[in-house]
Length: 281
Image (cartoon, rainbow, N blue to C red):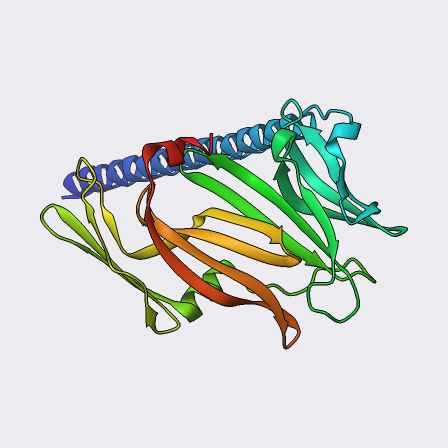
């Protein structure tokens, strides 16, 4: 009996030893795996940081061109009112930031990005609201292409050159324009009302292909601002599909309650031909 008892105890001790060894080995492997995963994570973080740094260096090293006399725009109403770029890039066709000078004052607007060349900014000095003070009006294009013209406008206080509040195009459309685009089998029906007054309904042929149409006219892809007869006026084309336009919303800006707001709004239906799209290139 003692012999069998001794043998049984030896077997139990052997099994326990194997179990402890196996557990220790498994724990060690897990620790090794965790170490590898942690190292890999750190490597990815370092690599991502390095790539971001390279991108920053690339952006910072982008070559700027010297500002030339042709980059300076002068107000036709006053030769002492100027606008010119802070930095010129893209072979002279990209202005990163604009500087406005007016009657001995100067202010930089680093977030204004304009096209240059023949599309360089305009500047005017006009009494737009009839209060005896002449506001500074800056007009420029952020970009253009086939079926796109991104006109921008800013009105500055003549005493401080601070931006005056200007009603956005999105807000103008939301408050004044109701429209509906209804596709049929081969036609598109477009209805527009401005301040509750319906414009002429337009029925157009569907464009080739299966391009989707908007439920309502979309504004903002083709927008022009200009000074006409001493007033700041705007024209925004209404799109019923991508690159498909069916008329223009036009309005002038008037000063009301401390803000420049749209007035005299009209919508005229007009179907643009292919040459119209190409004219933005």
